Image (cartoon, rainbow, N blue to C red; front, side, top):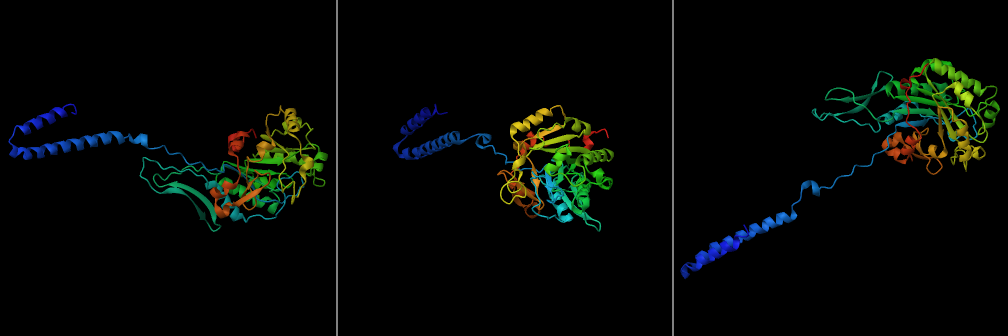
Length: 404
């Protein structure tokens, strides 16, 4: 079009000068109007070519917001009281507080609901959906209900999957009844895949297994030596009771009542040279957790500490030699100080997350006051290390397929 414009202009101009002077101005008016229209059209097209872009090219890709920590596996130390006096204990009896049972259940429910992912079916009409808790019966029993009004079917929740009850000694409070009620609540009402306990084992009675064993997936019993004299030196002695003999009795009860049996051992100055291979193989636990003795300021070292664990500490090389000595034990799961320190989500007796990143336990606000999402920001939890140390494993007895 623009190639023909000069020729068209010359033609117009020639036709004008062929007419009488009186009609010259009448002829120039259309010419000027034609020139103005042509110029405006050209300017508009040029501008469009300069500024137009593909919509997808100008829109920057939005970054996904950072994912918040989900409390998949939680260790709830609901009491600090204990009947043993282990010299290296890293969670000492600094208070005697225990939450009322209903408040503890409320906190556990918050953990279960935390991080839940409930996505509606896009092929259905959008309707309100979610989860709720209702109380049923005169006793105010908690019920967790997840629902979708589009189809009326239950949707999966992705909060806490495993709860581990610890202390102190968890069987000390109310002779284990408080613990048993929490175990049953977590398995039957919260329907957690895994409910476990860590105990020194000295206060467990067979009647407890009869009442609550079906709701418990794993019982971990602390045993640092198969030499009773060493146990006394460490602080696991209790009068005439033999810690090793009691361990074997608990192993039998776990088998009889279909509870997975686990052993926890803290390797320290008094047992680092011991060979436990034969005894561990004979007991045949599903896991043998082997910890390197760890110092925590304010708990077992430093000012205001109730223990002085410095004399129990061993070096990394000594710990590695212990592991090498027991390399034939297939259920062994080692945890050095580096792996252990920040890879656990720990709740104290007030349901506060404990941050150990600075070598001490700095508490968050309670999840009962500010909720899980806010409190967990201050937990110091290293999720990568949690996975690296094998923190997520087959932890439901239904999936372990044990030969009882």
